[in-house]
Image 1 (cartoon, rainbow, N blue to C red):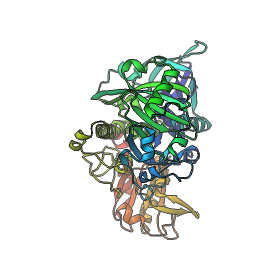
Image 2 (image 1 turned 135 degrees about the vertical axis):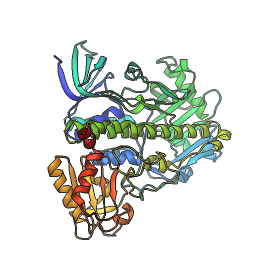
Image 3 (image 1 turned 90 degrees about the vertical axis):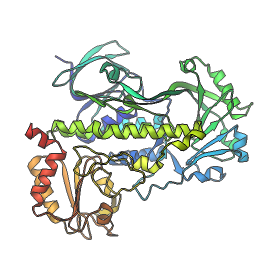
Image 4 (image 1 turned 180 degrees about the vertical axis):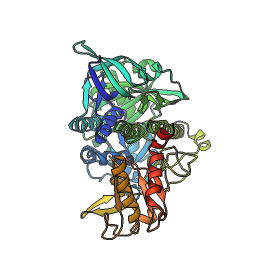
Length: 548
């Protein structure tokens, strides 16, 4: 008999694993998270929290906490200003020979973001280290009932037709236990053992470099005179690397080095400080090095996101260069996608076939996103080669990715990332953002799902909302229904929602718990109840269960 039984076992307590725990509990599913490190991340690679990730955080109530602790991201052209308010970082990627060159304006502007996100979503991106984001996620997940055990490692696992059995060990006491779960999420990172144990390969451009991240304190703001940036590539041949600001006191210098140099303790802290002085061109800089962490830059995507009852997520299934800040955000979005689907199956209102749509949806997004990160890496490291690649706009990659699977009833997209951003309500896209009012409070159309499906009908679409409420009662699935219009369930002061969603006054869109449109009816149907019931059976995998 196992010592512990739980619906979902999560291996890995980084951003992806914590997101999986948070979203599972949002949907009412118990889970156990196991992480071999003693705490959440103390040193980091991830700092960019995309607007899409912030939207997901908004649905579980942690967006404000992240916002309050983060640096706010502003237009990239402001990098040369010396009068920015505190905690504001321009969306600029620069290259220079030293800090003095930045002050003098002798830089190459590699990217200068002018993107605005307030017209496509309810929240802005922020710059916030994972050492600050992860504790917020952990606190909320535990408050919602998740069980998280740090300083605990998985020894082995095996799966059968009904579930997964794993042995875990408390690294402090040596005590071992057996855990039995219906499903397991492998969020154990790029070097995790679960993928290899499952025999899942990965392919891509491979390893493209090694980096030693050095976390340190120094008064660089005084030297820069208030000038700020997201990333500064420093091109000193003796100490090439990238510099970025974490908060009022802390910076990270990512030293580009050989594979042997990323081993823990290989480069002493005193030598790291000298390398930073060399890279910045400030020989007398006072530096307090806190810690180091080595990692490798790579471009690889796994062949499969699923093996039986085990699902890979985050870096376990895709690794990409940090250019663009896509990797960690993709991991959070992986976790969200699989969490609500596992919850649907475990809670009994969806068929097992729904779980097949995780790989069908997330692997194309992961592959194309990794490709875009690779293209940016080429642009920044070998600019002459960049012209041959088809780069997509940052906002399109971040907000415009699309799904094609059996969980979507509509014409399938041939690309996960479109050439141009156009969120117009078609099935497979994230629902268009429109500000609405509910009980006198402003809400975004993006806010209306999260832990349930949401049917949003036009002002003459009451037949759809009645049908949705009957279907929710019949099937037991979480499904909320709203008419959208003046003095209705959701007030639409500007009357913008039907046009944004691509429906007429009597039409409706069905939004999944992850905020993506599952189905759309542009107008009324002769029999709304029958039509909607068939759609819901199809997109939740219930129809497959019946026919099998």
